[in-house]
Image 1: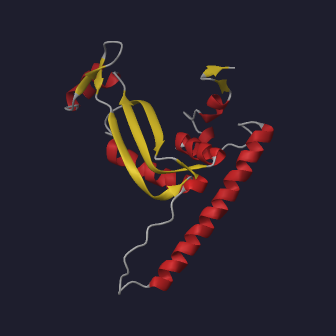
Image 2: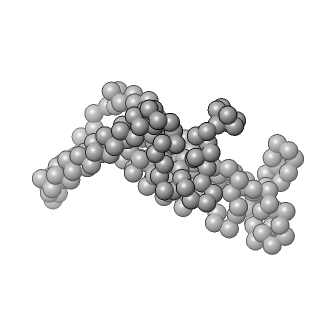
Amino acid sequence: MEMTDILALDLVEKRIVTDQLTLNIAYDVLNLTDPERRQKYTGTIKTDSYGRQAPKDAHGSINLPRHTSSVKIIIDHIMQLFDRVVDPNLLVRKITIGANHILNEGDVPEEVQVQPDLFADHEALEKQKAAEDAELAKERRLQDALLNIKKQFGKNAVLKAMSLQEGATAKDRNQQVGGYKA
């Protein structure tokens, strides 16, 4: 979730939005070197660039309901995709998350008109859309404030609790320059 949070903040900072996310999962070679795990695995095996055998990568994409840079929407959809794509019995080596179909915020096309439905409560749908828009605007103001704090005081000035848990990498990654320790 840390990577997804960082991706969404990058989108906000660059003033771009996306309507599709991709997830790539590379599995660890230990899945095939450990006899117990090897016996359970029945999927496709690939050879990595070092000549080692590992389970074939898992890959998937998911469409978002609208062009957005909302952390909440992006995390919800990436978690759905993760649950759908990943084999829970395998050890994961690398996770790659990407945003597709990116547009500048000002270039987002107007919403497509939906065919009228005689049985739908259009007033309730309008209220729901207005409430969603208000919630997204509030989240956007929060993201902008967060970016301003990070710009002024450094990337580690504000960290979410998930970035302080064991195994979290955001704090260490924020201190790197180009992927190397500064």
